[in-house]
Amino acid sequence: MGLINVDDPLPWHTWATVRLLLATKDRSLAEAEAQALLAPPSLSEKSSSIFRKTTRLLTDLGLLNSSDGMLSIADDDLAAVQRDDVESFTGLLRRAVFADEQNTDLTVPTGEVSRTGALDLNRALAWFLSLDSYAGYDLDAELARAYTALRPEAGTKALVNKERLPHFGAWSQFLGLARTRVVIAGGRGTENDFQSRIAPDCTIAVRSVLRKSSEITKDSPVPAPAVLLLLRKEIPVVPGGRHSMTVGIAPPEADTGGSVLSYALLRGQDEGWLALDRLSDSEHRVHLVDPDTGSNMKSISHITMVE
Image 1 (cartoon, rainbow, N blue to C red):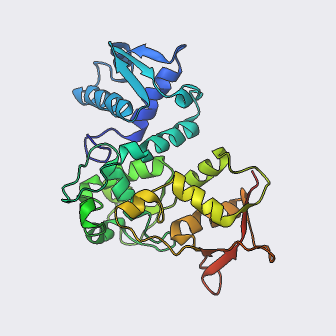
Image 2: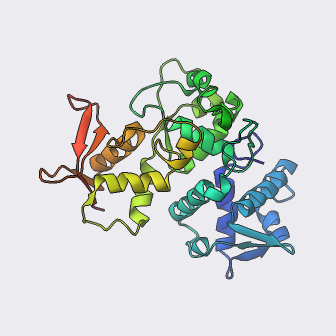
């Protein structure tokens, strides 16, 4: 089972299941009772199948325990989440999906790669987040390039087929790594067409990482290179991150942010929760892609979380 096959659970299925357990006193519930609440007999058999797949997925990711007919929260950080705090849940789900132990088989020497668990999603994300965040395009039209985007050991194809686009769009947006393009010229207007209209934008994930990192203190400037290292470590599917490089995506130059991280940081400044500064006497320098400047680049030395 993977994450972006047409019959795989969607991210809100995982949140519904976890939220139900978070509402209990000891963060556990009989599996039969959970299924009766989330997939009652009055719904289709497909609902029961999705429930079973969702609990299996959360168990495989290390977020749930399933034994002796009981479901329980397995992760201490998740057990501490409030039942209405979807942002914290999303951060923990993102951490689980990116965990190295979930991604040991991103590549194999033969190229006959596994497409189970988080592997397919992360290969697709590595390709998707290498696209230009500033450019307008039709994701359907990008699929031809997606089919040859990865190194042979990673299976070559970032997306196996276009039928996976709706699930990929749902997961990438839920994890804070994409945004919907509302208006695109030439769209066909069908449901799948609309769901495929997404753009690489990791702003939400970047904000979450910076808010929760012990390396970042509000109102304290941090050298920009250190922030980029942190973001590439915590969001390893962005260019320069370990999963991205593993599947063959070329990293940006050492002192540049690349398109998707540049976009996120500049958006953070525009929205008022980040300050990007260039101190004349600083030895630190990072160049962000910024089409609004004459040189197409903005040079900064420090980044400050201001809210």
